[in-house]
Figure 1: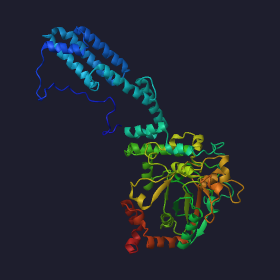
Figure 2 (figure 1 turned 180 degrees about the horizontal axis):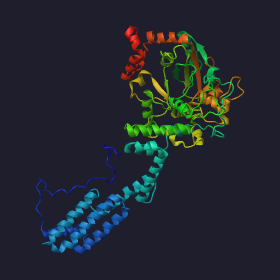
Figure 3 (figure 1 turned 90 degrees about the vertical axis):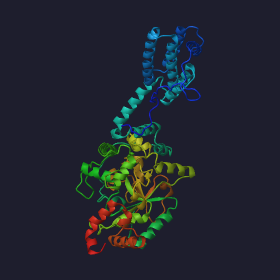
Length: 547
């Protein structure tokens, strides 16, 4: 659907009646004598002594102009109407009361044609300018030899785009055009990732097996060997500071989870696991578990985008901003909430909740990059890791253009070698209050080349892909909080650390965050929905005077 505020397309200019001829004083001039008009007409016609010959020459120039136009549909239609009127004029020329009247009509129509041609003083100049503009248009259209072919090719590409991205059909024309150009040019995030020149992965494709290892008893088994446990606010501060002091070359994004046994799953991956009937390691599981694939995630995102654009008129909102809004209000998306502030992550981990108050909680610290070799490498990583607002502004998510696991591997999607994150603009008050961002990546790829980075305790045998999927919906390589990350490993994958907070420590940390730092439900969720939730879940304490 074309927006009402869209600019008219090239060639859509409205025709206007020619203004009357006026004198310098602004008064309409009386018609000139017939002889003068005839002479002026003949001068304009190139000095021909006969009006019929002049008309013939004019017709030849005009037909040449139309041939140069190459079948441009709007001009052809205008020319057709002009030709019909002109032929009628010539047929009726014998019926005019004098030649001056015929010449006047002929001159008026010629002047109107020149005005439509852009105000040029003669048709040769108009034809030259038109040809230049047409050639420029064809160059922009991709080098096609005529506009009809270019239009046909554009339509074919548009139809193919809609087949590949059905969620795109609800986007506005303005959003469609913007995204179409980006798809032709390529997303800067993907090209920057490919410029990092990792060696291609071997045997990327179907999962080798989705059976769990015998050691995998819960989802958290995958990262328990790397965790540091604390049971007080002082210990949490000490371990957090140690983590950052030991790894000064890294910046971190922090995430808190109320239950230490929960995996690091995006909400969309978690919902698809339910839909597909995946059984967790602690349940009675099978030799094969139907974990969601990257193709499943993309299909689900297409359905979500198409549904919200068709039914809620989010037709001019980019895919990323739509996902971010849905995420903040509880809908399942690929995005994983993080904060740049470890105390905010601690608040989420220790947040009061009747179902998890007596359980340990967990904090993840995820490095935003690998260890760069030099400043040039650091710049490349920054460009490929942090998703730009430009790449986040299109109707189609940039990861939807990678149609195979091989292409995803080339762009480091799902490999764990690149930590992609997005810091969104402040379109919701929660983003500022939570110092919020999002991590996003593909479903972990299964490749023997990656096995050496995801080893079981003892460091000899790799975790199976089912173990990794049970532990996280993105590829994550853990390191110990108390030790600096090995430089060779840090150059290959961005490290992740985890701190476990006991149920006892959870209560103390929650109290200190509220009393010393004023982190509360009201400051973390400073909107009307947050207020409504606070009242709904805390009404009993409010009435009792404990709120």
